[in-house]
Length: 179
Image (cartoon, rainbow, N blue to C red; front, top):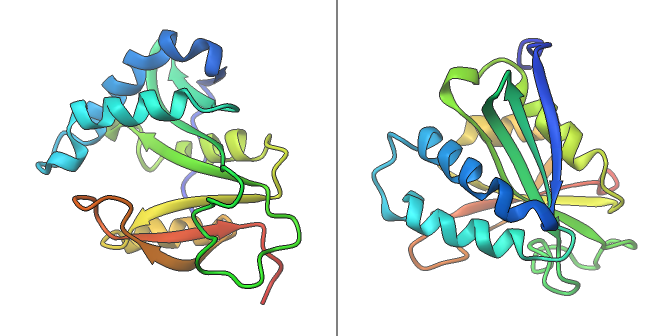
């Protein structure tokens, strides 16, 4: 488990109508969080496309944590399109209630890592959603991140590579009845 969260964090929720207002914040946090990544898949231009795509989806939901006036991290996602859920190819039969929230990004800047902020962002974003299921993708070369999500109730249900140049991801799902 992560240490207790810094009580000075302020969490602010944003929806699709505020996407333009927060776009640069999302890009700047990403640049800081991935400063040591050298591959094209994680560059800012590519990430800007993802921000624009996700923030344009109906039901886009984002929580940004601030330490004073400085953004420390964020989490965002949107409801999955029915019949196109990330987990759909791996579960048969489908869960009785298959409404799913896709958690696209959970990012904490290096200065604020290992403070409990990632769990607080996740809880605030996913815990307020009406969908009974939450799905996310985790790079399979990051087993510690996958293990962290498992402590939050996620289970790996499969693996997928959504783009030819993307990493291979573990598809993780939360909200399933225990097997």
